[in-house]
Image 1 (cartoon, one colour):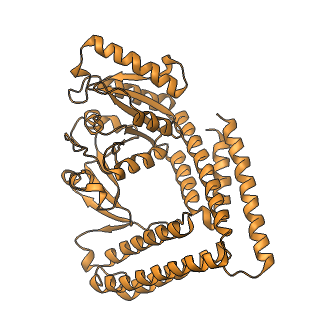
Image 2: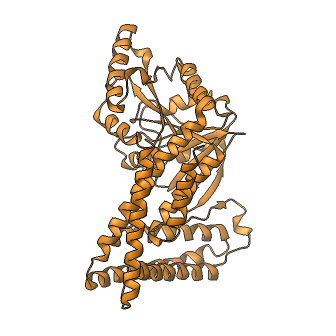
Image 3: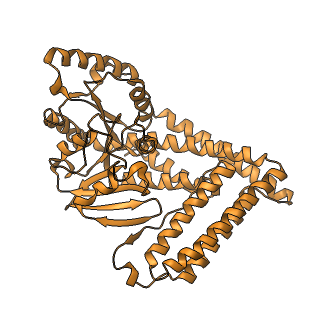
Length: 428
């Protein structure tokens, strides 16, 4: 492993820990460190909606794990790892539900969880599939370009976590602009691409050859590589033809050069984290230029929202006063609400670490957080956020030394990030 990568990660972790405005980037760096330590490679199946991604995932795994249908089906990112059959459903507020393997469709199916109204962040599935046995995590993603914008948003967001990508195309439709734009975005994060052309059973051999030649030339141009470097696999996910060639290529690469793939992937993601931090600083500087009246108005709106949240919290505490897990999960919901409000009012991301809490039928009888503790913690969350925002925006700060020191700290942050960015770019 290149020590420079770990050194850059450690340097950024130390740097981001000093600033309240880079909490999200700190969490991302820590996740990348964990990725390198565990050497767990994530292979995501991505592409436009109705290309057959879920059918392909099922074919690779050798059994029906993902729901399939003639309309857009997948609404939630679903990761599959090796293990005994089981599933955990993770929600945006930190709640986790253990689900029967047969019941995951209720959470990932667009028809049952339309526009992800349940607030599922991801579903983690384990199955004893041979493809996964060497530590590969296979991920099914929602398709981009459908009428369901949340599905496209989830797919775009997840490409940042992929190390390798199976980009699925289909012979029944030429590569279109949606796929081109999606591929361009994905290039910035994944280190290895496998291009699978699905539904080959609906065309004859001559038509297939023409389509594959067309794809290879266009993809090579988009990826800015020679045509011979494009890994192109004609398949029929429905009839399970060509699947073995694809899986053999993926597992072979993971075994022979998995560490290199992972390291290159982390470098790409690290570059994105640095760019994100620089953008966050730019937004922060813009907010600092607001007038006193504008600050007063925005803080006033935030205080109003906090008062509503606390009032709602008291009602929730009374309703679920005997359910410690539900109260803990609601704290996560409140943190998400506050983060969204800060973003809407000030344009910056405010990151909260979510505490995972398992919900089950025994929760109502379990002792832990009670309604009084819950109400108190809601108040503490609001007070801490307001105090933090007062500090980072120097709201009503009259000490000139404090203002100058914080601005100098901000300038040092920018200079350091710019230097690290240059160092990372030298590796490409």
